[in-house]
Image (cartoon, rainbow, N blue to C red; front, side, top):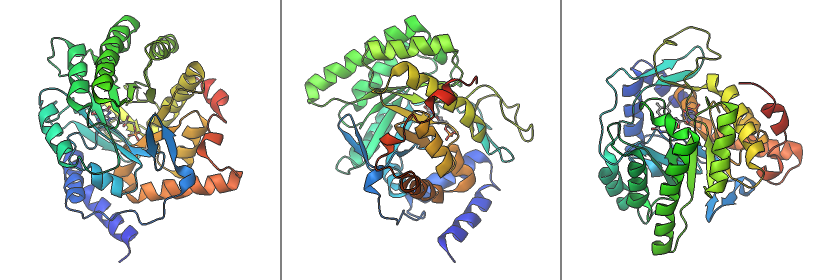
Length: 364
Ligand SMILES: Cc1cc2nc3c(=O)[nH]c(=O)nc-3n(C[C@H](O)[C@H](O)[C@H](O)COP(=O)(O)O)c2cc1C
């Protein structure tokens, strides 16, 4: 039996289970080495350096899959150029009651309202300590506990807990499943948050002699005026990059089949258009130098390429793995190499922004 055949059979089996159990089984399979590693030779043209990190390829595993840092190395072995742990909060928390994640197979979308279920800083820290000597880019996505008295203090605690071990940080203020969290995207709250986080990071830089980049992850549902404020604050506070985007609370682009009216954030194919428009608008506002990670609905080499031409330096995905399996990583990376050949380009940077104007002129 060929690996793709086995993978198709495994995916079918997983889809007989509820989405959360299927996710848990996939993490366990990765833990036990049951998922085949990528065998293709890396293409050096896909490698890029940002900050002091060299990404072997642009495709990263998005936050939310490996919330507790159980399988970063297995994910890197699949071919991802980086992986992001979390979101992790200072104290462990259960998240919302089950069921809290739903597949929309007809639309290849996912709705989740997990609500930051995670084992907390100390447990995740122990796992990262255990892989300390291994290489690979492993970012830590930090969040705030639902019942935090001071949310900014929770983010700062995340920086202090992982600064010596995280390849980079993502400050996630865009999950729709923690009430009030996205209010931190409003200008004055954001200014306070970024001041706190960046000064904590700078103190760590001073102590460790190493600059850990801090990226801000935003929602695809921000109004244009708010996006302008966010990007201005990001530039003003010297935040190192943006991640565009988290899941949407809209239900755009759904056929209506499946559990479309469940509460939560929508991701996957129906998110592609909205998140790509916001990405292009963010790129125009930020200018050419700010690194931006494009996320939302990438499910093929073509959609990955479109994100790059709409302004992304790096990419992440999650939901498409649910429908296409882990072979998708290889398919996307080979497809990006093929597109470089087709267009006669030698780096992804040369392709970036080719369609920014067109995407930025769309209305989400
Ligand atoms: C089940 C699930 C859980 C998620 N959990 C998190 C999370 O804890 N923190 C976060 O920043 N993003 C989380 N996300 C958002 C993803 O990282 C990503 O931004 C979003 O799903 C869009 O990408 P996609 O369309 O490729 O899935 C989650 C997404 C899904 C589907």
